[in-house]
Image (cartoon, rainbow, N blue to C red; front, side, top):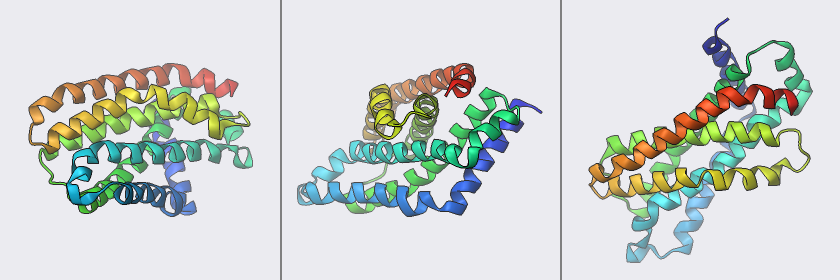
Length: 224
């Protein structure tokens, strides 16, 4: 069986678990919406300040919600010895990494679409450069998912992983937050040409951590 076929099986498993448990719908999505609502209440919308800082607030909400999604992706493996089941199945470590990262990325893309709609409506944001925005979201999401999956397996099995994972992950994701925010700012301001260097940065980050995850996830998975 090819690595891509195995990755598809792992991604399908994780997505089926989430569709049945509805944790993403009942917890992660409401959490993200509450975050952008709190920003709307905390900042004065009458002065147009919300529209100017909307890209940064949007990606902060996505980042915080992604921590829940990543933690959930590995929490499911602790139930009913599912981790041992994956080991006994003989799946390639790279396939497990790609499958779990793909499932997290799909969940985040759906989350971003809903939160983005909320930001446009609540913050009175005018959307320009839709192509740049979509490519930025795709590259940033892949980077978030790949990095989160890699650091998620590092924290898996540790008793304090709920607090350890953010401490490990947030500093590493600083380039993603910076690049995504700046690209969104340029895109929304109607200057997509200025956004492409930031999109390139996000693409390099995503490729780099995907490659690291493919190589390192297997040994980390066995030792966790």
